[in-house]
Length: 246
Image (cartoon, rainbow, N blue to C red; front, side, top):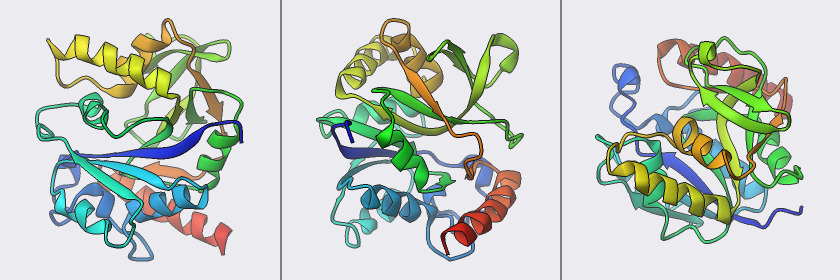
């Protein structure tokens, strides 16, 4: 692999308010599906299987759950977003700045996906890239507009976009240099807005001057879990993922 990757960052600070009545007061990353294993552990196992042995989890809401994972996975370091209830995803990524020191895989804690997603990103020749898929109709989609091979805009409102190439799944590969530019853009924005997102706001800002590519896997099995409907969808998809790996 040509990518100098030894780190991963998992954003896990959110409160998961849309799942409040379903997840019994646990963080979204600790939702379990058919096999009773928290979904975040599947992400961790996928990263470890790809040789990524320095995993940073940005915590916030009910952070003790993630702290307790460290006894099972010594590869984990945690950092807490103390302002998790009043900030967006970019602030969480900013909180990890003292631990990030190389290129890394970035992902969100409320995802399930085939492990090949991580391998494909690592093997891609694109230095900075988003992982995207085809149409899902899963609800709360994040659409990616591209100009040729490079990301131009990211939005949940497809009406404001031009040439849509796919849906962002919440997994990215970033160089350390790109991350430093994200931090710079974020700190300029934090003066007026702490709720900015890393993808729809800061990725787009930095991509205006530094190329940000994308890797599309049309038929990738994946799901995020933001609400009850997505949870039902994720349970079905997880069965398909497990049947492929068995």
